[in-house]
Image (cartoon, rainbow, N blue to C red; front, side, top):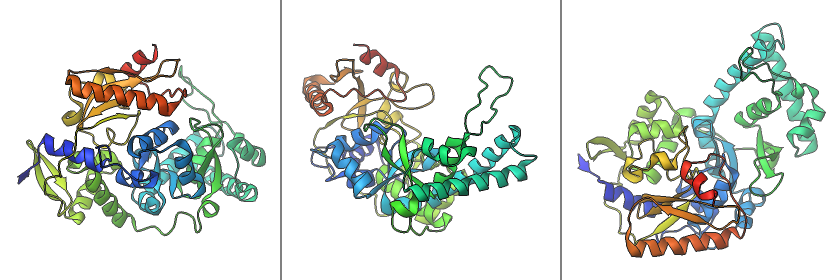
Length: 396
């Protein structure tokens, strides 16, 4: 079995993730495709991930790709997480991951409706949900685009309350609105459009998928074929990686993961004692990359691409990840994490290195911090999921 050590993995990361000097992407679509997809749970991440990979990019260019050209689309995908995906690849993500999520979430919502006494039994709750979905979809089609609040005015049943965690200290009675819209989105019937506020806003208008894109998301491959296509794309961007890495990334079962790797005919490699995989024909060493430094945002797809991160993270997890496994803003040098960054109220980018990297790398880090301060131009980005180091740096 061929060995692929840490140095090779880091070299691949620099080139394939468009972070190394001379390796960067031409536009937001190429940046997203290089990463399979961009994490979009935190809206700011999309813009910052693009800016880290596309020289000269700005918010307007990424918004143009998302909302005018529609060459990128925001959708539910792997691990029940929102991603920005190159539009031609959206049917693959839908069939490989989202369709299964939609089935599970529908069952869960019907269960919660029944527990809340919305109808006599689960079957009746299922019919109630289907009726509300159809009415909501019709209202959205008539409007063309709408907010959740506008749709609730058109379909008052969206203001039905669920009784969650009855008797617990954290009991709540949320409206069913977001759950119904989530379900319609997971089924591929509606899509998230423009944000209601700035590029930092997490609230979006909704549009029918068939209006947003000609023919909607497009023809989907069968689920098994879609999983093979997604596995191949992941190997191209993140390989070598383990089966556990791919299973975690995609949110699949172990059986689905193994079957997809077998269908790809993935090649086994030795990752210093662990079995890893690369795509067939991708066994040759990566071409050398010039020394590079990058500032990546919280939830950037690079650190969120593998389950097992020791080879690039080192001993820094406690300072750079929150308690639920979400990464904060990080600083990278030649394929490994060396520190983190944040913004105090004044808006400039401040950083802290977590290891001694020498004068040359420190100079590159200083220059990159200045570049990001200029790029952000006074806009303060507070990550949705905050790491201990980012909190510290943001206090000034």
